[in-house]
Amino acid sequence: MKRIFIYVAVMAAAVMVSCNGKKTAQNDANSDSTSVSDTTATGENVDLTTVAGTYEGTLPAADCPGIKTVLTINADSTYELKQDYIERKDGHDEASGVLQVLNGNVLMLVRPSSGEHTFYKVKD
Image (cartoon, rainbow, N blue to C red; front, side, top):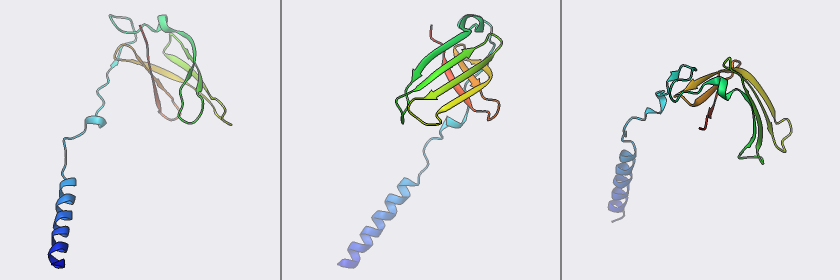
């Protein structure tokens, strides 16, 4: 009787493992569907001369009270970003580089030293 129970348990485990190994629909997360648009104002596109300026605010953070952020956008498609992590030692970061307008109203900041991208959406 014990052998039958062990045999059934092994078969059930094998069936469960084989079900977990089945592939599902392919995830398209690796494909980039965002398109880069011209930075001139046509229709819904952001005109950098209208959003050029300095913006300040505190962004939420998971491990500190917030991130004090100062973003300067220039009309020539460049930016300067300064971030201070509140109540953290050595929590200061500065970056500057070029930006691109994506989908008409999303600014993609490109950090030249690492190629890292930061995204900001321009509100109406």
